[in-house]
Length: 390
Ligand SMILES: Cc1ncc(COP(=O)(O)O)c(C=O)c1O
Image (cartoon, rainbow, N blue to C red; front, top):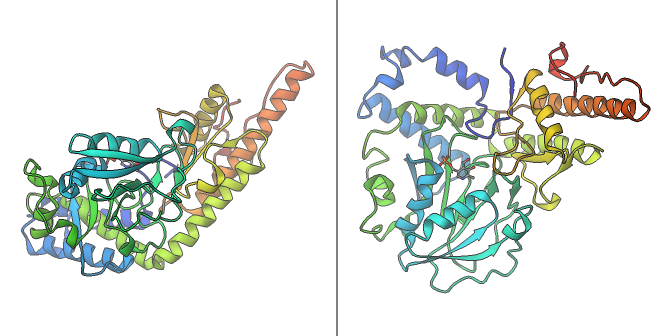
């Protein structure tokens, strides 16, 4: 039986996509071999990568003035690729709103001056910093932000005014989760392993004029945007099967009704979960409500042992991956595109049951009766006796 998967990445993929991949695994469209076995120079693979790009362009309405690059090295590779390709004047501005933008900025300091123009680090990254009037450096080549901070569970619901400077955005954990105006971005990039496909591909959508000039002389060729664009993402051997999987996910997204419909569903799922958290006497949200991510919902009981019991019992109940990131603790449910409303409803039911069992155990302790807390019971998927007591 497949579990309800709340992993932060690698993460859930649409079941129908996995079924298509399984059906095509041994013989892709009658060519007698798997996509994993075919030459990346073959007509079949060229068809796969071209179609993936076409579908992605349709989903995001990407104009011809942007290049779509299928690259390797993950989000972390892009932390270096961005300054190496774009920091022509040796200066860039960074908005530091969480774990991942902090790492990106740190990496950029190797290649030039990476100003921190806004930060919420002092507040433990519980919200995205105020960007109403950013002190943008006149020499900055770009302003960088992470649109959805996976660890902290915050997001920029709208892009800040960067005073004419191109925005470079890491969208790894909110890629294709709702409509976006690509023309507001200089570069939008995302590792695919959360919303789009299996780990091993990072997609960078890059405005042409930003790569008119060559990258730093020391840039490794596999991180070079200009070369990757010129070679159609086939300078070297790409992760062919992973790109094929991304293509299947793009088709699935289009079949669901595109980003408008996906955004509607994602907002509905997030509201269901946040409403439960806000109504709870046991759980509380970690991110400030006005900055809450609709992809990564962070919450806690405030008690590390109780959080751990929740994670263990949820797993026994078939609700997997609700442990907070190791650097911050607490709880986190990642509710990416492929996580259905049913899964979120099952989690909400489980939280209610867990809270009720906890309250019963607490009141039994107060009145001095031997404590025999019952397990979360009825409405979550797990109730078939697998959950242990709190
Ligand atoms: C928002 C964000 N950016 C970057 C990264 C780093 O990606 P990778 O592990 O592919 O290097 C992650 C990883 O989870 C992430 O969530």
